[in-house]
Structure formats: C-alpha cells, structure tokens
Length: 306
Image 1: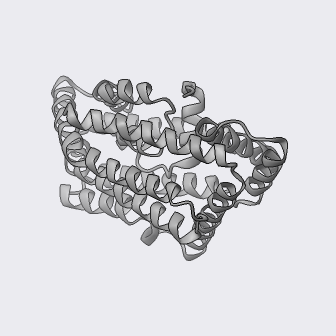
Image 2: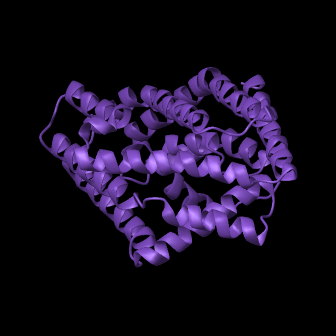
C-alpha cells in the first residue's frame, strides 16, 4: 500500500471532512483514520498509538495555557483515548465490515447503499465527538480574557490560511485541484486508472458542487459565537448547549439555502461514488477489497491491544 504525504493528508482532510470547532481538532485525527485519509495500514497503527501526543500538541497551539490547564489537557486526552479504544474501535470495525460486505456482494453499487454508509459515518463522527464536549467546556470556561483573545486570533489565522489555500484561486482552478485530489485519493485504494477512467472521474468531480466556502463561513460564524459566549462569561451549561448544537446538529444552525446546497452536495457525492465504482475494473475492485481487509486487520489489532 502506498503512503500519503502529510501535505496530501491535510489537503484531503480539508476536502473530505466537515470542519467543526478548532479547539476539538484532536478528534479530526481519529475521524481521518475512519475515513481512510491516512493510507497505509502501518501508518494508521503508528498514528493511532501516538494520537495522544498529536492531540496535546494541537490543543496547546490555540492559546497559552497555564500549567494547571496543560495538566487538565493531559488527563482528559488520556481518558478520552482509553474510552475511544474500548468503545469506538469496535464500531469502526463494524463499519469496515459492512463496507467489505457491500463490495464483495458482486452486485452493482446503489446510491441508497452509499447514503446509508455516509449516514453511518456521520453517526460515528458524532459519537466520537460527544464525550469531548464536557471536558472542552471546562477548559474553555477556565480561559481568562487574554487567553480568549489569543484563541480568537488563532481561529482567524487558521481560517485565513485555509481561505488562501482553498479559496484564493478562481473556481476553475479549485475544481481542477479537487479533481486531481479525488483521483489521487481513489488510486491509493484501487490502483492506477486508465486514461478513459481518468477522464470520466475528473468530469464527475467537476460537476460536484463546491461547498468549501459554505463550510468555512459556517465555522467562522460559530467560532465568533463561541468567542462572544466566552467574553460574556456564559455558564458551562450555555457553552455545552452551544457546542452540542454546533457539533451534533449543525444543520439546525444553517440557513435554509445553505442547508439545501450542502444536501445537494452530499447527494451528488453519493451518486459520484456509485458512478466511480461502476467504472472500476474487476482487478481494481479486488484491490479495493484487499485494502479494506488490511484496514480491518489493523483496527482489530489495535482493539485487541487496548
């Protein structure tokens, strides 16, 4: 199996994942594992076994935490990882098993099958995030005015960086880059495409709605609301309610038009997966099944060692 560079992993993560609150960036790492943005089974094992270090590093980059807060982060990350190994790894294995069964059935992939898997991924993502809300609230509630300002600036810097990376070019260039990322991503799991397959898949990607601006704008709006809550000294319950709504039911906080656009994106993406699977050769489908098996074995070993 091939390996993805850190640059490609980050780019794919921005393209494939719905960004949520930056202070919970730690859990994007685990979701990335679920969605296979880290290609290479040994890399998954190494990454997961060192996830606690990765998480602490990212959290500490958002503001200048004091010694007590850093100790709190250390403890909560350890607690979370212990919970994740016991509770979520078996769920990921179940998801992979369902995916394997779907690809081994020999039948044509149907859109309702893809939609069902997408909904399952969203459910796993929500369940992965939910236990992090309470400790995150405690950490946020303990920030002083200077730390809140620093957190606000960190949000702004990271958002500006993503805008420069993903939105600075004209739409044609953005679509071209997305198409190439899509091709690279899929080839890591099924092998190289023929020229005809490449033309088909690039065309499918070009026709997919470009929703990055909506995701980023929504995140910026929610971050601004969070900062206001912190500056106004909101209660822990108020902050918890806000984070839960943001992370668990984001569609309730989007405008009707934006939600319709994102739903169109999801439906089009589901259909694109069906169409791409339809142009795969028999050998490419076998390669995909073998790679799914390797991921299953990797996650099973991780679960056994927990």
